[in-house]
Amino acid sequence: MSDNNNEDLRPTKMRGVLFPKAKYGVIAAIIIIVVVNLIYYKDFLKSLFS
Image (tube, rainbow, N blue to C red; front, side, top):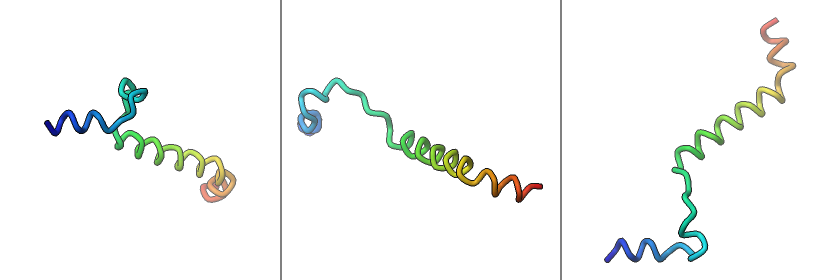
């Protein structure tokens, strides 16, 4: 009976939509933050290694 209650929590239009696992969202967010920081601080990183 508890399984039926969990399925009814989502709106009817969103029942067919598959959501990715939360861990993939966390990994994607970390990758995006690292890439943006590399682009933003690339001049600093070049001077650091030169």
